[in-house]
Length: 472
Image (cartoon, rainbow, N blue to C red; front, side):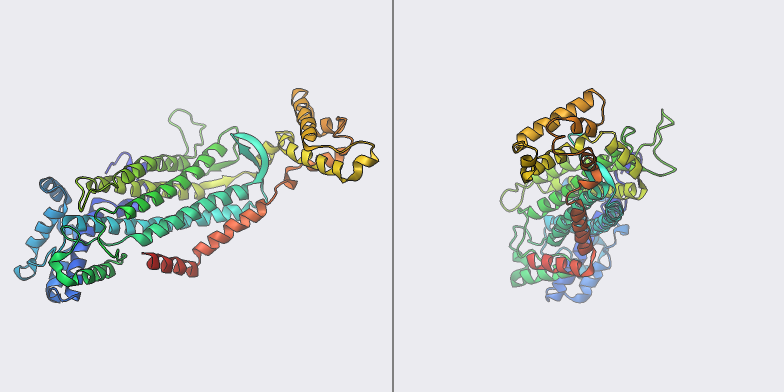
């Protein structure tokens, strides 16, 4: 824990869900649930299971002491089992950790910590989706410069910009929900056979999954790290979605663009420049989300586990997974804060569009010229059809003249021998109006909103849950 950096890079509610206490409680929850599951299957008295469960409170154990003792066995599960056994009466003590191995404890704790963190993270993402849906709906008709390679291109709407952000968040949330549904208990014993539990081993796994509200994996996955990889990839996708959105926000908030800005009386300043109005929440989200690629890579790179138990590979997952959950949670929290603070300036958006002098609409003029010339008017004017290449070259030449001579593009086009022969000055002005060349922007906005509404509906959540359970 860093008192200096965590407020920026570990912000939000996910942080508490992945701290040392959370991990310790998850390990103890495994031990409690294991005893109860074995009691359900007749392998030990229910009263003994409850005596064990009654001692499984993280507040009664010292994480620092357990961590120090972990160096002797290579993981903190061994010291925890000893400490838990010491707190349990002699009658129940012999059943503590019965049939399990250290990796069962750590892997299941990993799944529990992840599940609890993901539940919080999914709620945070839902809040981001709601904010983005409001932006998309409110600005569905707000015309904005589309930009490719950071240069003005054809016009879009800010509603479409927000809708694309919303679509990315919805997709990331769906991927994360799928990964959440795959989180499963781990119980295989020493080599994945559960030999010490006899014929009741598979039944104990099923009961354990029920007690912990995790999936039943079917068979132990000690060296099959697909679930961890899917989780890491899903968290990476969330961070990628956040990164794209806040990168756009910071670019659009530049002084020279100034189409959006964050409003918050307590943030945005600079230590050297009193005039600054920095999009601090977006910057913090960008910093947190930038941690994901390296952490995802580490987790995927640790997936090669030899034989029935890996030497170091599963140990390598603990810290980067915790960090990935923490940093992704921070990124989403800061994104939500940025969206809550975000203000849009439609007047500035239109001014930036107009400053291009109609040049981004040149393609529209080319298309119209070809269509008009091919509609029989060429016969009336005594001219032949105009091909797309000739139309493109003529309009491009007019664009260059408008820039070099600092003239209105519509005037230059109207005076051109080819363009002016088919398109009037009035029609050219209409063609150069960005509000009339938005294509299917409105349709795409509505599609994004519909997807968000569906993902937010209780029926949709039930369908996802059913799908997750059937695919576990």
